[in-house]
Amino acid sequence: MQPVNVYALAIESKFNRFHGLILFWCVLILIIDGYDLAVVGAALPAIMKDMNIDATSAGVMAGSALFGTMLGAIFLGTLADRIGRPKMIAICVALFSLFTAAAGLTSDPISFSIARFIAGLGIGGVLPICTAQMGEFSPLKLRTRLVTLVFAGYSVGGILVALTGKQLIESHGWQWVFYVAALPVVLIPFILRTMPESIGYLLKTGRQAELRAIARQIDPTLVIDDNTLMVGNDAVVEKQEASVRHLFREGRGFSTVMIWAAFMTGLFMVYALNSWLTKLMAMAGFSLGSALNFVIVFNVGAIVGAIGGGWLSDKLNIKHVLVCFYIVGAIALTLLGYTRSPTLLFPVVFIVGASTLGTQLLAYAYAGDFYPSSIRSTGVGFASGVGRIGAIVAPVLIGWLVSLNLPLEKNFMAISLAGLIGAAAVTLINQSRADSSQVRKAARLSN
Image 1 (cartoon, rainbow, N blue to C red):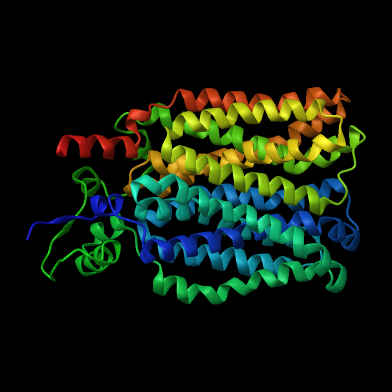
Image 2: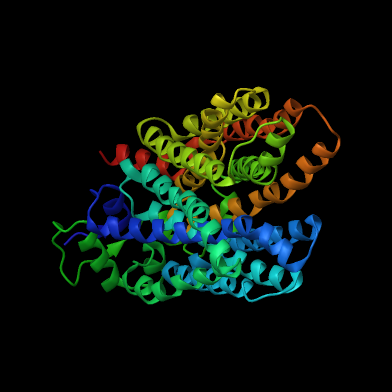
């Protein structure tokens, strides 16, 4: 019997229960991940009062997880390509669940910040791994939609915090929104048992029996026996050792730098808004009502933007869609600075959510689409990690601009500039080096 190319089998497959199981786990993990990252924002006022700390100390406490997410994305995402994705996902879930819960046991800023930093390692690490996992097994025609659907879970986690945080804090104290974060550790045995290993890792380790089992799940109509040889793409098999060097080989170097720049600008916009939007709106004389309403509108916009962008990307060219999203984000942010009507404020905030956080979620899908399977976790991990520089710089830079007492429009225009830079960066990426482009080219040649 002819050898079976597992990668080709995956990209040509039709969505079935096997794909649904991977989608379920990745979405659920990202919902939990989004909750754990957003929970500090909901609890910070109560924490400041309880620990009797000022805004500067509170900012350091809230930002401590960001440094962890940066390192986690870079190192744990890369490590997943070496030790296996299900195992690394389990480690990340344990880190962000247990140490988020541990933060609820602290009573001083230093121990709280340490717990949040360690939790951040898991929070940052699981993002690129889930992107790579969903992208690897998705049918090519659905890849972007499925990956963006996974990242929509991230926003659902933020909404979950908004819906439950206020009531839980008022009834049981701020510690309990952290304690409940420990519950997902019970999922770890099920993740390890049911989440398939990556194709590249199984090829590298020669685990043919597992590859045949996966092939049968990908395509239940496929007839293979226990002696059928499972293979991958030659270029992938030759280079199974995930390494940062591979991000810069085969003409990917400049595009990798541009992807990093796009991630930095996207995360700059997201975290500038997370930190300062409420304050900037207050400066304009607006009252958004409860923070709950704002968080829900912003995150619902992000979900719609991510899923809608994913659908468009599978129908059109994902690069062109992403460029348009960055430009829309820049325009929407500028309009937000000039919006004076309370009636228009919430629709504009919705569009801002769709075109900033939604754009960043789509950027994760684009990075997953760009890199081949053998270095996909590494590529997305480094993009996410380097991009965190924008997340760290944003609150400080916008805070400095706010201190200058500039007109409100200038502050929003400063944030919107990041969207234009991101659009330029994506425009300069060489799409012909993308994995999806290579796959389509190989398919045309084989026909």
